[in-house]
Image (cartoon, rainbow, N blue to C red; front, side, top):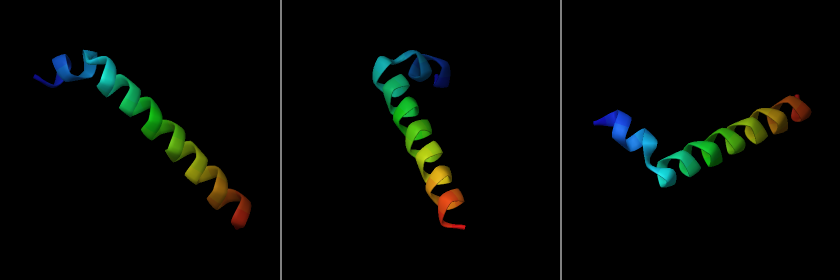
Length: 33
């Protein structure tokens, strides 16, 4: 199930990395506008 996947530490780290890169991407776009 998806819930079990979400409890996986690796998945958690992946989501954190994704959100970090997404935030960075938004920051970069904002600065370049």
